Amino acid sequence: MKRREPATRPSERDLDALVQALLSLRSPGELRAFLDDLCTPSELEALADRWRVIPLLIEEAPYREIHDRTGVSVTTIGRVARCLERGAGGYRIAAERAGLGVAANDDSH
Image 1: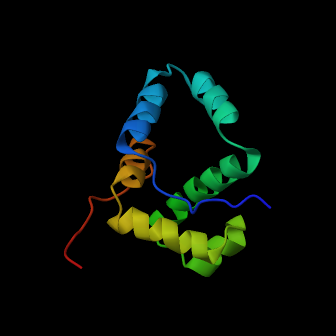
Image 2 (image 1 turned 90 degrees about the horizontal axis):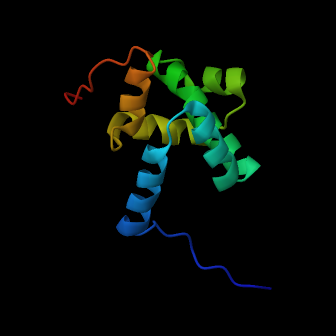
């Protein structure tokens, strides 16, 4: 059996190259085609699941309710919630631009 190395974060250079490729795309259709080529169906499902729970987290729905409504695991919901609250800010920016009514990040708690 082939031994796999543990997953590691991509190098900054490789990640920057991917970001530039994404930024070069000019339409939703181009981006969809790129994602279809880049990701496996399971990876696309995982990405879509994460994005699907964002509006419900913004509405402050309980994790169990989000799970019941979406089928997304409570573990994934918790991970997305942590990133939404304390991550790099990408979910928050995208949610704001998608018109999901995200309030400014409140660092007081």
